Image (cartoon, rainbow, N blue to C red):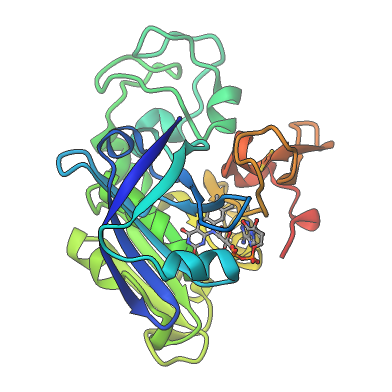
Length: 311
Ligand SMILES: Cc1cc2nc3c(=O)[nH]c(=O)nc-3n(C[C@H](O)[C@H](O)[C@H](O)COP(=O)(O)OP(=O)(O)OC[C@H]3O[C@@H](n4cnc5c(N)ncnc54)[C@H](O)[C@@H]3O)c2cc1C
Ligand code: FES
């Protein structure tokens, strides 16, 4: 995590009140992972504003941010234009892990203590908390005696489903790119007017389904109305809390691993001010406070105390 001075290469509105910026930031582009965010300093504002990385191209040295105008800070950001320079801190936070979402060890439950493909010892508990952070080599022996075969497990266990709601859609595009479009993308918006990025998911090859609250595009209703009843092996989601809660409940009912990206009001963005508390659950069900900026923003949906989550 570093400070970067990033020049705005392109800046355009893609829907009413929603802006799409491409920034020149070679080091950030190299380091960024899907789910991570940058903390942006804005002239005249003491506190930085957190915005997810919508995509990054190490080859082009660019990072893309898509954001909605909510208050003073995002209004000031939207007023900036080409050739202006942004002061960014990042990449911050943890990330969705595309490799383990697709790999056998992302969904199987190896015996604790068994040797994994990368020579590390499998720790299912750790793997589950971190949404399966163990990365065995394809073809290596796994804890359950099986041979790791990401391709095989993908077709055998079902498909990965990405769920984005409103301004929660941008970080899911970065994850869809990392998955090379091999996923179902379910995107929810208020109306056709606020629908963003859907064509880019389609262009990647994602099976893309859209729900709008007023029925002006795709299915009328919520993202959950577009969910398949079966055939899903893992879920990653970002959006408003009521949507994430519904996604978590769908995943729990079907025992599908599910990672969610949470939002919280942030100040420092690096775990120093304790301003972005979120209520989490230990394995024994007792609650404790974690911090979205430091421990997240990506969490195992089964470890979020949804009753206490801010809507
Ligand atoms: C990890 C993370 C990723 C995000 N990614 C995106 C994104 O990709 N696109 C996007 O449009 N928005 C995103 N947001 C929300 C975005 O940070 C807020 O909309 C923005 O900070 C609002 O600032 P403001 O000055 O316009 O609003 P104001 O209400 O004037 O903000 C006042 C203060 O509250 C904080 N704040 C207000 N709302 C939020 C919020 N929802 N989350 C965090 N802090 C808030 C601001 O940072 C500021 O310190 C993300 C938030 C988080 C936590
Ligand atoms: S914003 Fe300061 S601890 Fe998270």
